[in-house]
Length: 274
Image (cartoon, one colour):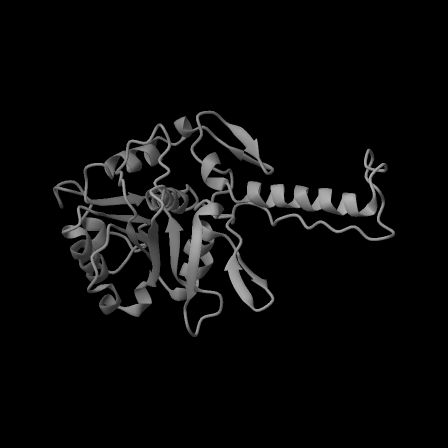
């Protein structure tokens, strides 16, 4: 896990440009200007691809540095490992903890592993051998865009009239497929297709609690991730959505409002399968 789990991970891809008055890097003076441009473009592309590989550096066997950040070994995160393991058998799993301990990173890692099928060798959590249907939701459309969308997919980028994401989030950038965008909210993703190892596509649908319980009715889901504590009516509606799929409903939040109905679900003896 990164030392700064709430900071959008990864750096912006390097930009390569050579102008007539640009200094020639040491060791490249034997290359023509065109050759230098081609080399720097290749280096920039390598850097871009590297920046899209955050998933492979989270919860490692041993601590290491990547792109200027320290990633500690997963032995430093026993509660995060307990959360993953709980998803193997429980239908409803909550990671309730203080701020800035990596709750959202943990929920994002679970979501990315399931969407891609790229489970690490140490994985003890729930597995699917097929693409999955996922809802990822938070308090408002704006916070979902700023937090969940960025954590999973990276930053929004504009290339002329084309809009996309830079793939520097937890979902491996090379697995991100077609994106649809929400109407009426700038740069907010509505749905995104994620390539699964099977060659088929998982789908992540971004929602918010401000849409109300009705937005969570209808479709069955394999995974529902609620980041920040939801109202009890939304939690209960989501519980129904995973009931017939053998799916899992996960929550990652700090119980800022005290002992609410949602929090009570996870106190000892309140719910046998949670």
